[in-house]
Every structure is written in structure tokens, then in C-alpha cells.
Image (cartoon, rainbow, N blue to C red; front, side, top):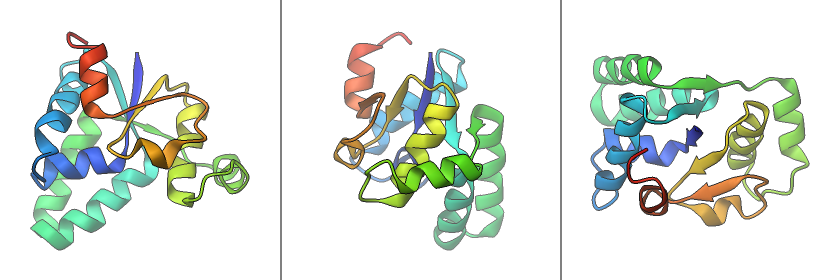
Length: 138
């Protein structure tokens, strides 16, 4: 099953953001162990690097991205994704890009802490807790 993790899930794990990190870590572990086919939007990698370098320093940010690249595939962002994101009806362009990249990449589920940001999604959107409840063994 192909699952795209929203940027906030990865940040919860890397920055140990309580109380969210516990469930987000379990979802990431499912991708790391191969229980799910995990991917991130290509823009998530750059966002993660930028934010973690500010919080943890450049060396740790690079190490985090190297690890993420070993665990997750990248859902591509091309001209069609960027253009369709303008017209999909999301209030937040970044979320629209994540959604459209997921659709283009054949993702089945987006896991996010903020499902309200994906109200207009054309695929299943779950919180980490909801995802873990539905797929406890991957």
C-alpha cells in the first residue's frame, strides 16, 4: 500500500514534538520496515532540510534528509502538479501540491496530523492514530 506522509508527520518525529511524535514515529517505522510503501512529496525534503537546519543545525539536517531518502520515495512535483494545485480548491497551496503529487504518484492514503487541510482530497486522508488503528500490522 502506497502511503504519503505529510511534512508535519516527519517534523513531529525529527523534532520530537510531543504528544504527536509517538504515533508519527510508528507510522515512519512502518515505512522503514517495508510494511508500507512510504513516500514524501518532493517539496517535503527541502522543507524538512530548511526547518531542521534552523532547529538542529546543518549537519543534523543533512543527516536527517539522507535517512529520509533511504526510507521514502519522492512523489514528484512537476509543472502539471504545480498548475493543477492552483485549481484543485485547497485553501493552502502547499497542501494542494502535496495532494496533487500524491495523486500523480498513485498514493492510496495521505497521513497527516491536519486532515482538515485536505477536505477536498480525492483520496483517503487519515491521522497517524486513525492509520494505525486501521492498519495495526501494516
